[in-house]
Length: 433
Image 1 (cartoon, rainbow, N blue to C red):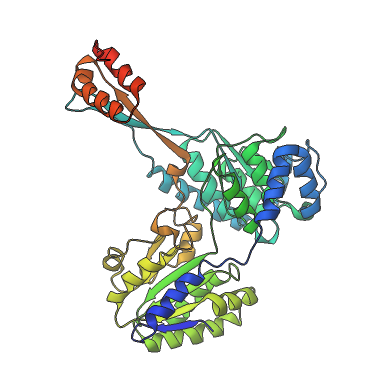
Image 2: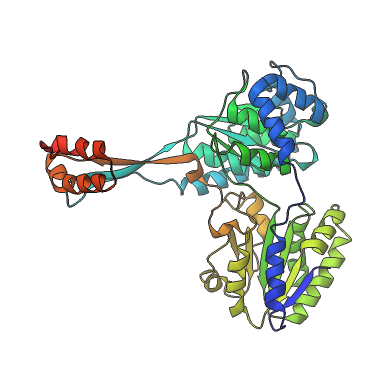
């Protein structure tokens, strides 16, 4: 059963703090294994990638066969269900349209001192997209990661996807075609992340790596950060649902289990001002679990990480939500906009009873790549800004230098940097030392 909390209880503060602390727990100690793989790929390149692919995915590759040919991609995509492909095409249009709205504009101006100032935005040259393979294949994630990059203007987009026992997911291949991925390598795991970061004779290094993966992939992304950029270190999926008792418990139960079925470490939390509704929703979850194909996963997630918090009234909800800083936040209340305005920390907010989080997973438009484990306190979901660099622009004529130069000289000498001071002074036509 999930943890049940009530803000009226004397031990609420302690139990809520324990709930927050438990979200940081990680049972996976994979760093030493991943470090050895990353070092091996850095040292042996293609040979290491080929060896690990044979070991972990049971696929024998050569340098010439790591990349999928256009015909192989087309053949795999051709057998994808047509209705699902049409859904991907609809999603792609909406994701692209949303992210075009995010594109920032350059700006240049001259300030009161006569200095030309400004900034401009430029896309990174290349990005690597990691896509899980096998049974955990998510074609929607291909679109959510690749399309913001394409809108930003990234010139070269490489995708890596494991193909256990040689199997390729048709919908993943179709999504890659729709998103305009340039090259696909059938490799995965920490070895794929290392190959993208350092490059091999066959696989060119990229500027940034994005995309979800297991604990080994997450550890590898953490290790190569600095050599390349990364999007984030994503943890298990999570949702917080704030709901009043005018909701249908079956709806909210379905929303909670939509997160729980991702994996056993996912977390679903209900915040409500009605103890009666809380009990009805818990009962609805149990009924729905009996009908789900992934019931074992969802049941363990709900039992181990789920929580139901009963508050005195919904005015208490914003402070609790901000402490949780959830990846997904559903506001299933009569006036969601007013409540949303009082919440600072959330990866994505879903407004109203008719907006399930699952809509955002697929076709709403914003990327579903969002900060987890409380990192919404300081980070944002994936967007075009993740594939752009901002460059400052500064220009000073002689008059501007006359106005500002003496202050720069004074500060340089205060910091003990004489060459800095003289590089300004010499342009002013004088030196004092």
